[in-house]
Image (cartoon, rainbow, N blue to C red; front, top):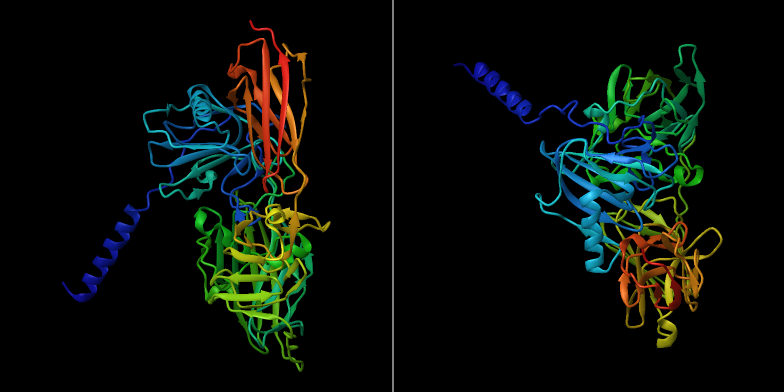
Length: 567
């Protein structure tokens, strides 16, 4: 056998082996998780704050309590109940190696609900995370497993539904045959051109330029001609709308080309959770903070290893030479192949101007590759290496108990530590202090504050203004649907409003006649709810005690007596 034949044989073997290791996504294996029309309020890969959306948000007709069914055989592998995030979440491991996830539930069903509530009472905690053994909670395709809701950080009733591969990477559920009606083309908001080399300019400007979109008769777009030189890239703000909803969903695929040659493809099919925060380097983060529009940069910026990037040539950037004519094209698709195209005519040009040097006087240079420590007044800042995506000059100033820590137009990837020297505070005062980021009203929002001696510190991934704040007020507690010394035999629940205007609620604990009772905390309404169906007390006279503690240790105790007829 000659060398060429041997080489061809080896290549064929490698290709066959690669195909064998990349099985096709199973079609028609998973059924729909609810027996209602599937209309989305959020799509897979959609751009969210600090992350890509990892599933489908399915509308639930503006109500809670819609039955959720197992889409395939398997077993409950994880259950998590939290005040925030996914709220009440359920994870099922399926026999084909994939997993499905259900979030923002109102309740679990059957044996699952009994198991969760039993564990919550055993641990005396509403917040809980459980990992049942495979044989504990098996499910069959079509079994009722839960009810849709609005728990956790949900903006309205819906079901968040995910499919994950064997490595726990979320995948686009539409790849599995989940069919969502969609006859609408993606919509384009804006296109921006970015100079990317020191000598590059666009329309005689050395900064990003927003291009005017010109609609064409066939539904595509052209932009005004771009006169440029040097290395440049482009970005686009676009979204998709599906049938039956006006929500601004994410697109499925973006392809770019220059004079017919592919430059970059972005495909929202699968990603890993450990890469999702790189969204902040994918979008034009500063533009988002200023304009509340997420522009997807169609080139690979420094320190951005997103697996969503496909077929990249020269990181998606183009090189424009003097006198050269070309066309850069962007094609945006949704999952149903509805497509919109934008063509950008480019002409190589020269300029007699030079870029204006950046004024860095008084600023602090931070290398993204190195640890950096900065002290300003009573504040010290530690920026670990790789906390920032790129080298940057930061505007940091302190006055008394307030730190102006740059401004939130630069993304932070890893936690930065801010510390405050509180040596001049007494032990009594120190216990009530915290560091908070100021909101637009100038009010401090509590950051988890650590104390070591007279030093206070927080960890943050957001630039902005931080200040030392004091919370001397205890939480307030008020009954919502009962009164002290009254009969409430017809009540199915006990509702109590808890609020804290300073550092916020940290914990709570309630007992009925000395026995722990499980109270669900809805932080969006500041309400605790106890379900009398738990049957903790069968007494006619019931003595309730509730203790609520805020984040600096102020506590309030509420006690009341009520009466119920027992059946």
